[in-house]
Length: 399
Image (tube, rainbow, N blue to C red; front, side, top):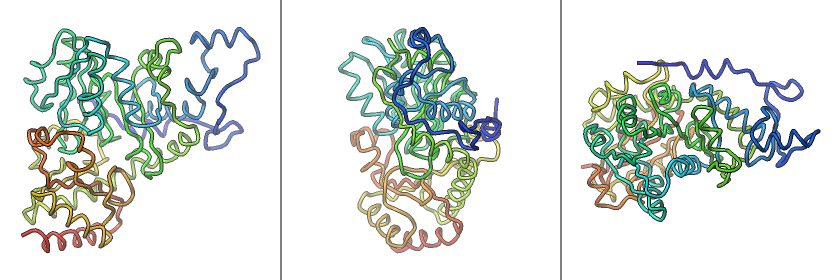
């Protein structure tokens, strides 16, 4: 299995500011001047490398971040967007036309599910949701007009692991693109190296790590990115989900601590998961040998970055989950909040929050309990203390 070292690839990238600064310069211009008229014409036609036309297309600050993401991901190019959903929807709309078909994992982020279930219907695009772990079901769902096979590397919130190499084989039969959302496992998994055609991120989460902005990214080969931002036909260029360059600059600096943060998130998540398992609670974490995809994940993961910062515990009922979460917030375990990748631990009831767009009957079909609490473990320096608090709260409330 091909593995890479994303942090090393990122660190080998040399980027300097306009006047030799160790941080790349921030360019907050919306438009750019040309010394010759012909150069402007050539740039409009995509024939002039290194020239900037208009910041909806490219901005130097966005290019710095995109180049860093491409280095980390092992792709030729990348492009950054104003949100993770901006990245996902641009990629899907770029690939799908009226009459086309997409096969997608049924366990996916609620916003993605809603977009596929409710929004693309107006374009006469057909969607088939499947259990992404059932490769036979995925094969059967594929059609001659299937253009995209879509999955999350680790599904939100049920933590199913996508068998990316096998999914690539299935996608190739229909000449469909394999699109993987790697938001949960940056650096831990490298989907492009495993066979994905396009990798998307919500950079709001682990990549930025501060929960102070919303941003997304698309990583792929140069031909794909260039088609996506073509001034005449590029979906990203024409829909315009451009990221503010000031935000690009701050995310770029945060990116260089990502490997350290992912290691600590994973260390804390593994410790808590093992403690919960030992006490007999129904815990789901890909770093536990009892997880059905544990061996599969181990065969894919890059070395030294851990198993990720996301785990869940099933308390059976939404009312019990609410009591426990409120008490954890009261006792400073973290925050009752959606999202993930923050330096404080975040927890939420997925069925009532980030997956609430998914109808109750489909949640049950997916195996999502109404009492599921998803944890995004923070960077706690004393995870033993935090774990003791959580276990005491559970003992008080769970009979």
